[in-house]
Image (cartoon, rainbow, N blue to C red; front, side, top):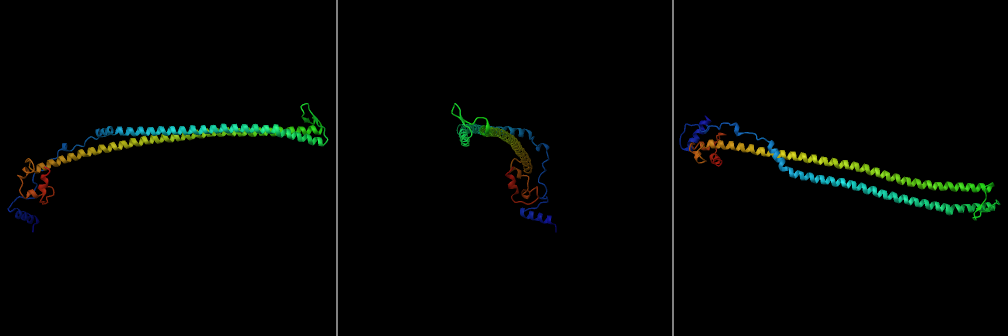
Length: 285
């Protein structure tokens, strides 16, 4: 049993006639390959056109990014200036307070404490029957000789040392205030420098990212356009093939004149029977 003969007999019975032709033979000549039908479009002008189209959008993004950068840099400088200004004001206030405390302490020592101490010493010396005299200004003194003179001198030296100690403490506090203010200035300067560098680096990164994004988008647009043109070339070749199948008879109806009923239902590509093959092909002719 020959399967081909069986199929041929079935075809003959369905068409109501006989034929010696092979229904699976090609219905027409194959469309010859023409190199001009397939040309890969030059993508360079497509990329350039995409760049031109995208340029205004990305330019605006860069302008906004630069504006954000300038704002950030301005905020850094403003924050630094405010911090240093507040530190300066605090240093001035603390220094003034230390001066006032020093003046008050010295006044207390020289105006109250020291005279009281000397008065107590004179009273003690008098009770001990050590000679105590009164100066023309009314101040009591034990002179400079003997036990009384020695104790008076000791008291004077002690009071002088305490006064110097108060002065040194006040000056040290004032110096610390000044040093602290200078440290704040240096810290803020370094902090501002680091923040500025960070913001500038972020700005450069943003610019680089936008540039890369624009390149990728432009390339994608150009590749899509190139693919569309290649697809159109393929469709044009397919149309020529359909026209050749139709025999060049001027449309779907004209293309049937050279085909038998059997050939109208055989797909020339797959060689498979298809009841609706020619009806579907006709729609594209």
